[in-house]
Amino acid sequence: MRTFSVKIGSRRITLSDRMIQENDYRKWWIIPVVAGVYLLPLFLNEYSIYLMNMLAATIIGAVALDILCGFCGQLSLGHAAFIGIGAYSYGICHMTLAINPIFSLFIAGFTGAFVSLLIGIPSLRLKGLYLAIATMGFTFITDEAVRFLRAWTNGVEGFKISRIIDIGFVQLNSGDAGFYYFIYTLVIVAVIFSRLLLESKIGRAFTSIRDSDVAAEVSGINILLYKVLCFAISSFFASLSGALMGIIIGMISPEDINIMQSINYLIMLVIGGMGVVYGAVIGAVLITFLPEWISMLSNSFLPMTVDLSILQYLIFGLLILFFIVFEPNGVYGRWTVVKGYFKTFPFNERKVGRIAWIYRWR
Image (cartoon, rainbow, N blue to C red; front, side, top):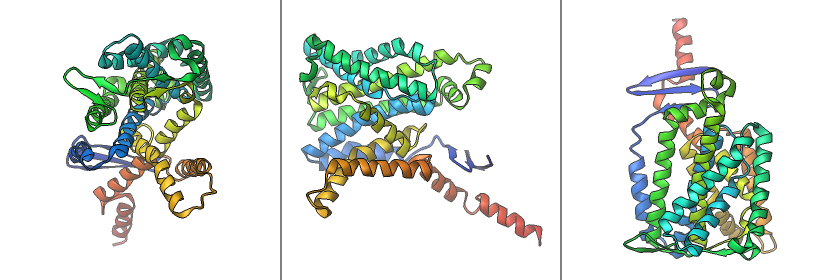
């Protein structure tokens, strides 16, 4: 694969045929983005705040899956199971055992991490499609476990979860702006943690395993240990995301633990960009709001006889095909290519080649 490096000040940009990787730690654009996120509730109605809260929980879930699939290269179809485990763990701790909601959130996360250790040690010895099938099987096991433990989970009737959480000095309703600020603070913490994790020694071990587990093992990396650690970290954030979703919706049922939910999170990574934290955020935004946009367009331009669910699956399928064929690095990957092109202009790879050819004949 051809590569071309250009150093601009303290930045070094590496171009290749497939991807541009940019090491730029001075991302000042994050400050206005965060400020805009915190100012947004001033201009939103109640339903829009609900959607934004769901988006926040989805972002945490997408970042969780990106840690496992994007950082470490372990394909999982059991993401929905850990989201369900987090929701039920929070509901049982807070509603049944009357534990403080903040403590219940952490207990839900650690419950998912603990369960991941039980299934991760045997299953992470598998690779690729076999690992995906094993994690998919865990989704069905979790669904049946919820139905079997109906004394704690209410089975198919669903488990009602309070939409109000008490953080000590104030009570937050999941439909109000106060909960919006709370959950987006958690999103920022999750994103920052993921960025620091990727740039740490542990993150470099994850990416080494993703690129070549044989080379990583030869280099002295304990493959099984780091795979299990990655699975536990991912499951913690996935369960935290499930607990937050349970608070926002106010209900969790076995129907919410299905393979399609896991596939939706994989679609987020494919569209946004796998292995990049910001790509997971972009994918979560697009997949969360895409059904709303499709519904608006269908109500405006399509006849009432069109089945909206079929239309959504059709558009989702076309999007996946488009990004797999034409944009394998996702939206964020394309953005880095465009940004890298203009940062090196007019000394990008093609331009340098033309200039060298002209100077050769002068």
